[in-house]
Image 1: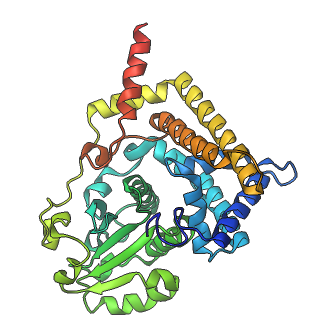
Image 2 (image 1 turned 180 degrees about the horizontal axis):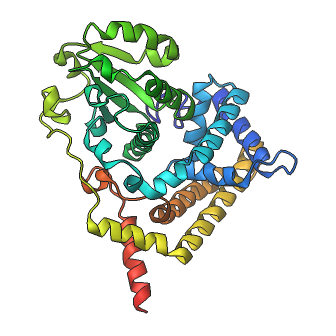
Image 3 (image 1 turned 90 degrees about the horizontal axis):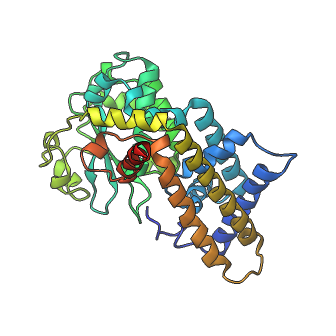
Length: 361
């Protein structure tokens, strides 16, 4: 799925555009109406959840997932924002890998490597390296949510979704963790809709047939239709070039090797956490950009006849993205993917140098 596909931001028909406008009007009313006002913390979560993305793209995910039913999409979106707040996604991202179990990351049970032939990031899941009960449930759930968020940072326009490889080589019943799989499916279908493009289940042994019989009813038919069983790697190569696969899948990439935070990474993290004033300024700038975006979006959604309204909305969308970029060092951290070169966010180094210079003055 890409921004140019039907129902996506660059390819909306009249009815889809009206649905998007209707969604925005419902959301803005929920934010600003004194009688229906949501918790202010949820309002903050909405634009933190949007991150670098155009907020229209975020809302369109829920509209497509709910087949353009505005009420259904709106309720699911609000449920997602509440979940992010109550579950602690913001806190997890602020602490980053320091809040994860290093030993669990190093198992290589789930990581991103390369991209498929249309440019979508590939999430590689080594099922044999997940042993039920080896790590606390909370630890595994944190790693799972963190991986989902990393996937969003790895996306580049026009792609909006990821490809997942489930490598079943060496699978045994000790690796079959139904509760965690239910958690993963619930995340995908409810809190990260339209983020799953293709799934490949590779080298599944016969023993997995019984497991699949149990799992299949949990999947939305649309999600299930995206999953393919592959036993011949040549079939996988139709979708993914071998240069993008790890050696254990007959690719040429080095097998996953976690790069832990450097001393400099930890110094930077501590610097950002202690820069209270800088964070306040960045948060206020982001808040004002969000309010300005909502003001313009409300006029656009209402159909106000104002000159250059579309151009103005495009402008404030960029301002919102720029404001989030300035906030990023205070609400996110560098990760393995920054250290490996897969994610480029120079704002971390720019902000760190600015703080150092300010301290000298």
